[in-house]
Image 1 (cartoon, one colour):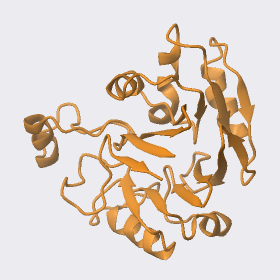
Image 2: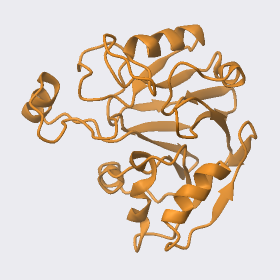
Image 3: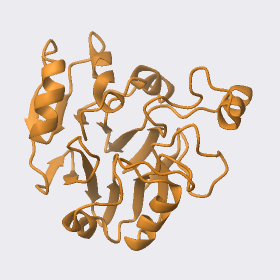
Length: 239
């Protein structure tokens, strides 16, 4: 199994339009970017997307234009699903898996596209092309949001999606001891918002969950480029 971080940025990405902060200035000078957070999971020739943000077309082009067999939506915020329309007239519409509240909202917006929807309840494992997936509810008020547990053989990967630290106990239990945790870290440690974790909180959660390794994702333009354990666009993990 291979996982590629197609993007590691927040809703507006880095560099942010019209911003001249140190991170955005560095991005423009060096060509570095944080596209909207999305994952590409590949196994035995099959490709599965976790979230379809507005940078999807570019992300697929930059990663060899893989044919996508399935899509998972974690929640109904535009930076996590609005790129789905990029499949129009490109390939057969992939099957989409999502918890019922997410599918009801996102599916209505894309009702003009003929795609197969599969509603999956939280904490209910299901298999796509040999990989087991489980939607895990997190806490991203007021939106209903799920993270994921991704399992293949003895390998377990956790993805919190957007959340603050108030993750349900059952979700914490499911994520404990994962081989890799991809964790929301919107802001540097000095800043706090009620919907997300900052960098310090994300690192503490990874330690609390005894993750063997972790990367911070969903990073805003306020997060410096040189902090340890930050995910970077295009980073690959092979298991």
